[in-house]
Length: 70
Image (cartoon, rainbow, N blue to C red):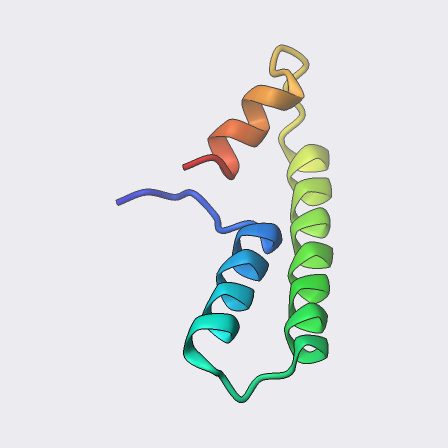
């Protein structure tokens, strides 16, 4: 089982695609607000992870790829 997270951008892309192709009842403003909340949570989690698990050997790209890339 993968522990990869879905980024807010990936979620937003899927939500917009679903809206366009499935004529969802969700409004774009609602979708954007969810993506913004997800993004804030991602930033908070990254900050907490950095504070609690500082690893000076790990580069940002490595952290990002391990956390978000599929």
